[in-house]
Image 1 (cartoon, rainbow, N blue to C red):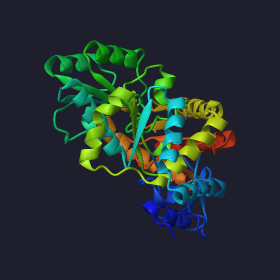
Image 2 (cartoon, rainbow, N blue to C red):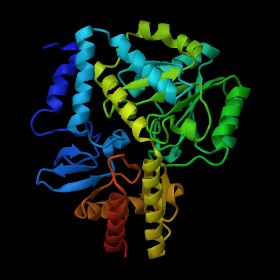
Image 3 (cartoon, rainbow, N blue to C red):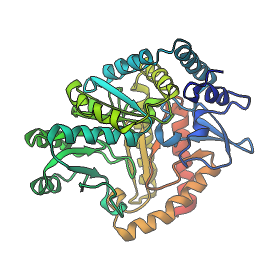
Image 4 (cartoon, helix red, strand yellow):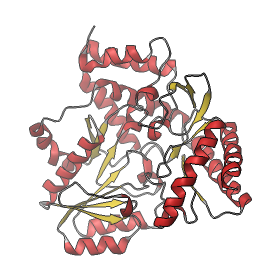
Length: 398
C-alpha cells in the first residue's frame, strides 16, 4: 500500500463496512458518543434512531455527511495524486479554484491546521509592516479569561471606537477578525462596520486579515468578503475548505504571501496531507454546481420560522440567522446578555436541546455555539425543525 501522508489507509477506513462518514471522525464534540453514523443531513445513534443534524462538525460539512459517491470521488483524486507523485498539481488546481471564489487570494498556502495558517498570516503582516502588535477583534470579551498571544490587543466586534483607541496606543501590524463571529454567534456586522475597518487599516498601513474558517464558502462561494463586498489583505480558511477534514489555508496577494514564505520553510511547518486537499477540491466543485440560492433560502426560512415561534410565546428570546448559519438565544437580550442573563440562558438552553433530541433534532450542545444548514437538508427538514422547537420550547419554558 502507498502510505503517502497516511491518506490511503484513512480513505479505506472511512468507507469500510458500516458506512462511517468524515463527520464521525471529526465531530468536534458536537455529537454524542452514541452517534455511530452520518449520512446526508442526518446522524444515527447506536440504537438506530435518526436525527436531523445542524451541528455538522461545527459547520464544516456544508454538503452534509458525505455519501459513498463523494467518498469514492475523493479516493480517486488521492490515488491519482499518489500514483503520479504530483501533489503540486492537485494543490495548484485547488489554489486556482479558491482564487475564482476569493479574488483576494491570488496564492494560497496549504497547512495542517487553522493555527498554522493564522501563524503564517500574522508573521507575514509583521514582516511587511515591521511592527509587532496585533489587534484581534473578538465577539465577546467576557468569554475570554486569558489571551495567550504575545503583543495582542483584544477589542470587541462592532465597536469602532475601541478599535481606534487601541490604534492610538499601539504600533499595529495587523487587524484580524471573523467577519461574522460564530462562537458565540452568529453576530452580524453592523452597517458599514467591515467597510470602516477596511478604511482604518488602509489609513494606518495595517494588514487586514479575515478569519473565514467558518464563513468561507458558506455565506457565499467567496465567503463573507463576497457577501459584504469588503476585500481583506489575507484570508484564512479551514475545514469547510477541507471537506470537513482538518486543514489550514492562508491566501492573499502574491507579494504579501512572499513575506512569510521563508518563515514557513525555516519553521518546518508541515504541509497539509493530500486527503483534505482532495476532499476540499471535490467539495468546492460540487458546491459551485449547486449554488447558494437554495441553501440561503433554507436559512432565511429557518430564521423566520424561529422568530415566529418566539412571537407565539410572547417572550424576549432571540433567533439570529445569516445565510445558512443560525442560533436560538434563550435569554432576554440575545448575545448582549449580562452576567445574570447568561447564567439563566445556560440553564434553559440545555433543557430545550434535550427536548429537541427527543424530537429527533440535533442542535449545538452549547448556547455559545452555532447551528448550520447543509445542502443535504430540505425545506421539509426546516419546517420539521421549526415545529420541533415550538414543541420543545413549550414543554420546557412555560
